[in-house]
Image 1: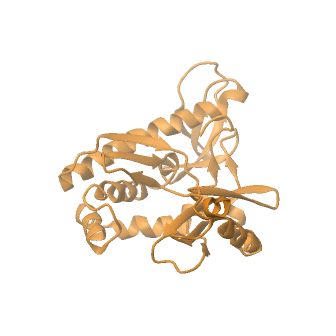
Image 2: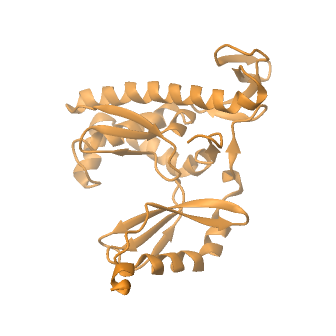
Length: 249
């Protein structure tokens, strides 16, 4: 009986692996077509694929056996990045230097000096990352709500709610009820990339799959979809390296 329960244990959607002292999130995907375990490294981060009836214990063992393969392929550029003063963070694809305003109160401001664009952040130094993170999320929600509504209108569907998440391996997800979850980091990407993800997720309200009909739907609302998709494949892993303050996700 216990052996049966172990075999039927439901795999998690995300598991974690310690590599050189760094905790790496690995997305877990169950595939009806898979005949064996597979570890891949797309732009969104590591993915462990397993057959539908595979035992999770066997999948974990496979992952640990291939940890060195993964460690050798994780780019140095994708090490954890924090929203700290003095760091350079992309905003809508353009690098901005994070600067403390020295003011206790106020709003985050986008300005520019001789060296380039700045993000001027108020508050005590220990609160700066949280202030900036909250502001970035608000900007992301505004952009994604607008683009989702535009694509929904084009495709004749209804988006009931737009929410933000801090997934370590996904840019978005869509439920059949019309709720779309997006990754807050999309506000760091160029606008055409955010637009592609919005088109992708809204298209799932027409086709809840990744069939040729789905991709035709994405292209119908965003003819230039290949541009954003290609950018994510090339640069998404680095974008995922930006992490929220430790107390929030």
